Length: 470
Image 1 (cartoon, rainbow, N blue to C red):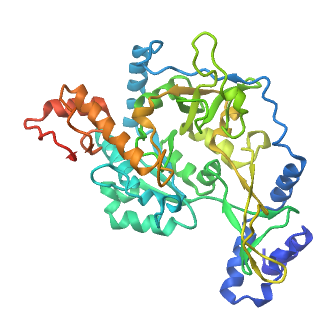
Image 2 (image 1 turned 45 degrees about the horizontal axis):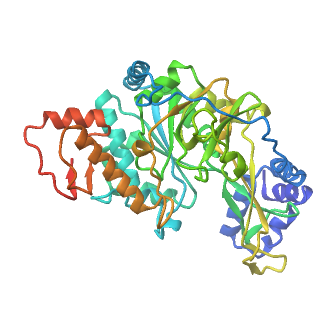
Image 3 (image 1 turned 120 degrees about the vertical axis):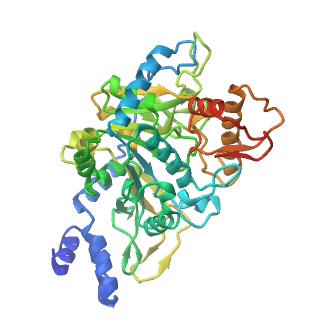
C-alpha cells in the first residue's frame, strides 16, 4: 500500500490524527511513521476498543471456579518417583533426538532494577555476577553436550533492546554456544489509544506503541518464521521461560517427558503458594478448562479459602511462567486464522505520554491511555490437553523483578547459593560454615549431575565462602 492509500485508510477508519503532522516531517520521519502505521490492524484495534467499552473483562463470574489438579512432585507424599523416572527417560530421549528447543522471553529492560540495558544482561549470580543470559546459555550448552545435540535457543527481544542484545551475545562469543544455535526475533507491538479509541502519537512522527505481552510471543514465533524453521529441523516442542528467573531448569527432562507422556499441547509448572497474598497467578478450572486467574483479578476472599481436609490454601497452585508447548499448537494459536483459537487481549489503563492536537508534548498525571496485551497462560483453555506439574520453589523459582526487597537481586543470589549448598550437603559435605557459593552450570545444572561430578573428582576444592566451582 502506498503512502496516500495508507493515509486515506486511517482517515476512513477515524484515525486520521495519526498523520496530522505528516507534512512537517522529514523524509526519514515520514518513512518511519508509515512503517509503523502499516503494521497496525485497524479493524483489530476498533474491535478491541469496543470490547473494552462494553466492559467485557469487568463482569467475570468466579462462582464455578475450582482448583486445578496437578501432578505432585516426586518428593511429596503423594508423588510417584517411578513415574517421574519414566518421564525423565522419555524427556532425555526427546532431547537426544533433537525434538526440543529452548525459548526465552527477553524483551524487557533493566529499568526497575536501576540498570541501563536489556534485562538479560543484568549480573545475577552470587559469586561471579554472571548475566542472566550467560546462566541460561551455560545450562543449554551443558545440556547440549550431555545429549549430543546442539539445542536451538530462541530469544524474543523488543524493538528497544534487540540490537543491544545481539551485540551482547557477539561480544561474549555466545557464551560458548554456536552462533547458529541462537535465534533472535522481536516482539510484536500494539498502539495505545485514548478513551475515545483514538491512536495516540508519542511524537509528531511516531505512534505510541507498546509490546503485545508475553502471549504475543506465540504470534511472533509464527510471523518470524521460527516455527517453520524449527519444524524443518524436526523440533516438536518448545520449553518456554522468562528472562528474570536464573533458577529455571531450561530443559527439564522430566517436564518434557510428562508433557509427551500425557500428549499435552501445553504444559505448565506450578509451585504451592507460600501465603494467600502472594502475587502469582492461580491455576484453576473454569467451565471445564484449565485457566490462570491473576492475583489482581481473583477476589482476596477466594485467595484465602482453605481446603477443609488439609488446611492448605484451596487455590494453592501458583503460576511461575514456565511452560512446554507443542509446535503445532503454537502455529494454530499464533497464526490467528481461527477466532476460537486466538489468545484474548487484556486491557491496561496507563499514563501514556502523547502529542496533543496542537503538537504539544503532554506527560499525563492520570491514566489517559489504553494498552492491549496478551498473556501466554491464556493458551491453556484453548488446548485439547493441558497438564500442570509441581516443582519446588527452592529449586526453580527466584525471579529478579525489584531493585530491593522481595524478588530482588539480593534474594535471588541467596536462593541460588542455597541451592548449591544443598547439593554439597547432599554429597555428604559439611556446609554449615558457608553462606555463599556458586556452581557453574557447565560443571552441573542439577543435583543429580552435581553428585555424579563431585564424586568423580580426584581432588576436591576447599570448601570456603565465595567458592566457585566450574
